[in-house]
Length: 318
Image 1 (cartoon, rainbow, N blue to C red):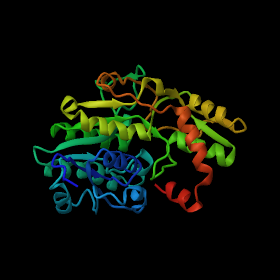
Image 2: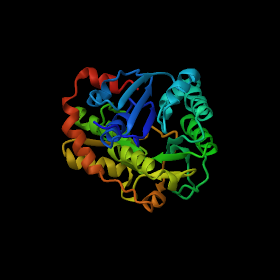
Image 3: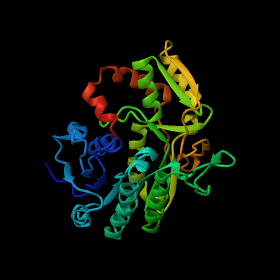
Image 4: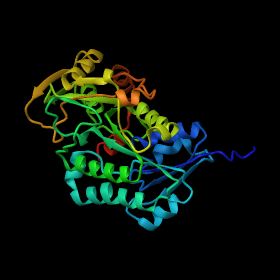
């Protein structure tokens, strides 16, 4: 077969995780050459579907290991930076690890990239913190309330200085090869299926959601539209996927009528995510999510009951 000299090489840090395991197959299908740089703390099983591809390379490495990172960067045209300690519970559990991974790791990455290399950073709506008027766009001042949000704001600053792109992702849901059950819709659906009952705190807090396949599509879209998006920040999601937490509970109950929902005062969101997000900026460039929350819940209900106990244990140990 004639070699494609135009083939683009994408380095994905943390590429064996929840997002990476959905993104890597999409990129390979589009004939990108992909290198995954990951600690593989949960193994490489999430990428088995791509194991026969000559376009996939795996490198075991820490984002904080500068020398190994330099080596991995050598042949990359584009870097998708996913490696992070994700979520405020994980960051609060080990603040030093969170700061060194999410901030120092991003600094080392940006420092060692060449001028001709492109950088796309996975950020979060947790950067916003509490919004006084309950509505935010990319221009809304950032006031993160959790360590997780703070590290992502710092990461965005580093990426903007490198003229890269930051994608502030909505709350993700759905099935990927490296499944997470600590995410709101995934967690509540699993509770409804296994216990026929779940509690919900701060039920009227508004959240915005995005299916994992649409997250992966957003990164592919950004790669393909890099010049239009370079040096900017984009909220990634859909106005049609803005819901209250109670709305989500009702959608789960519609799919599983015998489950019982109990509002509770026993929990609180450290990020105070209670706002509606505008996605006009990325929508105007042509990106539109394709998977509804209802379809995602249906997908979860089809697969979650048949997961092995070992797999469930691993997905809850994040």
